[in-house]
Image (cartoon, rainbow, N blue to C red; front, side, top):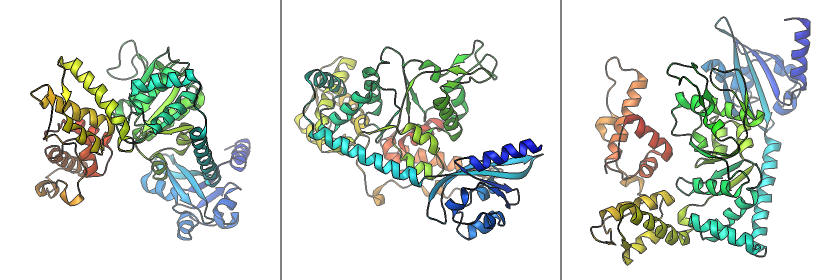
Length: 472
């Protein structure tokens, strides 16, 4: 390295906002940025004279991300609590020379002040919500527009009116919106309404379910590709979903299922406003409004290293939480009537609900929310031989105590490792057998997800992978 290059590297390390560690392939600290002293609570001389093994043992690095890279030989990201009690997000990358790990470069960012800002933002949001409750009625035109939109959404409860009013007021901006809530609460419907209210309403609304696209196809589907980019590529190439949303709204559902590599690429698109197709070197400008949704706790995923912190803050500009159906039961009658009307039109008969069915509809918790309610109504409609829907034996799935949940057959869980079977193949076989057993005893993907302690979207993806259908 020339003297100029050394000076450039030194300037980058010493002036960066992030705190850098440069560590040898054996774990010895070679250099650190000056600001790391205050964050990690140790003098520069002590840090430089130590190995990451010693720093972790002393509690200065809790845990050491460099050791994780040395163990896996892969880049890593995790949350740390330093010796001074500060919370930081750390990233580390291996440096290989001729296949040998020679250096690990890590950088960390202090989140303590960011967390305080986030808490302050949450307080301001709460005060804004309270202000809306105390404020006078909206002007007639705005109130009428809101009522018309809610007629389409079948949402009359006070809490959903607040959500709709917030979305209506942020719709003219291009701020990113993060929709939170359980599966089936109506995040997609509200995202579409946000698009209709926006200045982009005459342009496309592109919906992408991040859990439904296989990981090996994700990049080509999202970013598109040039002719000949890979074997089997279309001769004329293809515009990706991001380009298809040009001028309109891109809705990424199940954003928590986005692979880490795609998170990095999406963050770059958000920051640069451009993308590069597979097999191309020319960046293309893109312009869309980004709305994302998830039923997962993204903050916990960040702490677990499954979601990028910088992407999380980019997405979490306008967080909107949609409550579950059990917390807004006054919306159920409108939802039922609208669904029944669609079913009658679809199947060409005019069925009505028996009076006793309403007690079941209003008294159930609906863990799958609006989607489960609609599925249950369709089953009841199809199973009723007359034009009056009684469905006495079709009860919505309710949570059962753990002791009463279906057990996985012992023959599957205790299956021995077959000859020449790898661990990966063995675990896949157990997963398939478990899902097959549960699909015969539980009535829905929500019930299976509850039994296994995973998300409903993960269950759907696994059932599709193994070609399993629910027969309970």
